[in-house]
Image (tube, rainbow, N blue to C red; front, side):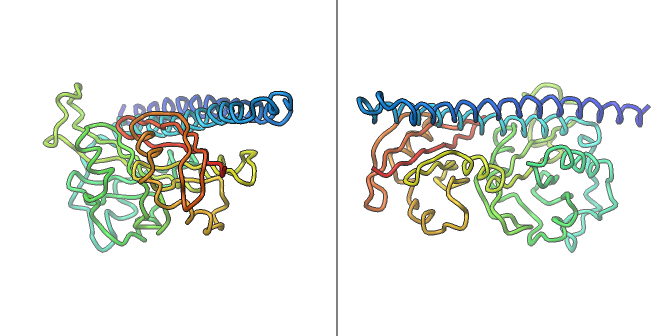
Length: 317
């Protein structure tokens, strides 16, 4: 019966994932149709441009920024749904065997607790945006990581200092961390952590540190995932669109990653009033000076549970 139940779980989760992916692809297509439609208006309606160019430009950019904010929120909620569904599977909710942890290999052996590793592998094969899955103990020690090669490449064994660990523990809910440099790949990543509590606890009110089993964490390289989205936008030469985290770090940009000079020119975003407004959940537009250049900035917040980020559309005046 246990084997049959596990197979049914996997079938159900795959069906749900398929539905989520199908919905997300439709939303992506519609988003780009809307963005291109806005660009067509700004290009083709010369009469309006001659009479009210600035107002129309801001209006179009406001719509584009909101579409991009919705786009990122949809992707984050999709990833959260996948991790949360998986975290409720009996394979994941069973107590991990801490005695199997070997600090020299940064967790358990490759062939240990296969049922948990299999859930992670299934997610990685189903969602190409999530590129690493791992399970950490209540004290922050690494239990396992998939792909296993990432576990082998880890340079540390305990992750209790990470903000996604602290956020998930303190809120008792899925938590999206800030942009960090991966301890396994050395590349920028963001991690989403889902706390896992004892199987006999039904109400969230009963979830405490005492019955915490561990954290189920997914990591995705937003630089590769979302740069593609922003770099496909039909922007003018003096325009840039960026996603920023709640520390003002650039998560993704419409600028080519090789164009370091232009990225460096956007340093100090956290000191802008625009940044403070967007992290406070406000949207709008303003003109601010960045590195002695006046820029029109149209902005909107990106909200995921207790985390707020932002999307900024910058144009040199």
